[in-house]
Length: 416
Image (cartoon, rainbow, N blue to C red; front, side, top):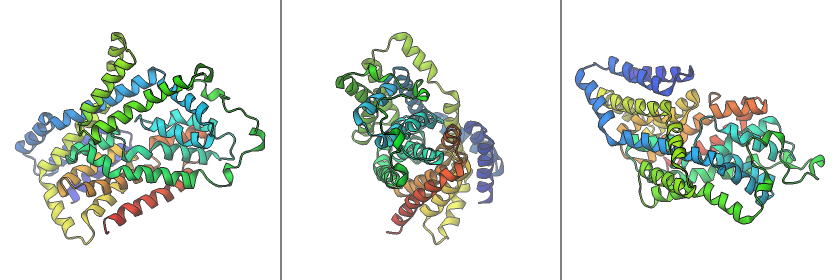
């Protein structure tokens, strides 16, 4: 137990020092190997499993296609067109406060909350919101998809490590996305602060602030409902098709994302030179190296034989194993502020202690997400706080309350 904990603390310490997750996980694998009666047989077993198993390359290919999709939607103007279309169609600033960060949250991007922050700033002008209120709204609604979006890196990685089909995880945890949405609307979008200010009563719905000029296309460019519908289909279509392929047809993440990207290349009529540029710009070496190192850590942990001793220890504790792992994931999330970090550190243990158990995986994942959302080290929180010049610790107070409700519900489900 001490050997495993010392390794985990090393990885967490490195991540908090802003060391790349790939380097941190490689260091963890090396330390784990050295303190667990190292032999060439154990090392070769872990290396062969990492490099030769198809699951390793599947998750890396899936992540690559996710980056390709993000590149296509961003460079084709689809994201900007969608947001401007929705503003013209909905004519409700309160709905836009949810829609803007939520839509951009569908596309995982490191520190991506920065892209929706100017949109939240504009939509909140007619309300008496503090800087901390704006941070909380942008931060919370951006992350409601962490439980059910099959292109979220942490979900794909968790599926591969535990060998639980991605569609099963999405189906099992989809309710938490709706719960997060409902809780956010009930507690973050109500109250006296949403009474319109007098000076903004005559403000037109299509006014675009200077801060948005770099991120939104001009509203005059979208004059017809047909063009708005086109942006809507181009923006949401790939995500919806991907969910259908994964959940209903049980496609792997790599295959479904490959099909979606190919379809978008055809629909958008992307030329050969643009395809080459997409492939080169989407090749994120840091991300792919991180995934490879995480898979190596998982196989090293299994080959070391230490997990079997951990199983014996946890079986003697009165609490369910899922709760014990969930509490561990919660702490790792608070310390790292990274969902991928939570999955990388705790899910190899889930894979051994409860192989194929979707309930245990759900408990660990949901509590890990809660921890990462409450972490001052979360990059999205940091960049949003900087944009709004807000106190991030005050902004985290409502998040603590909402995540407390979600954690209480997931724990209660283990005893019902």
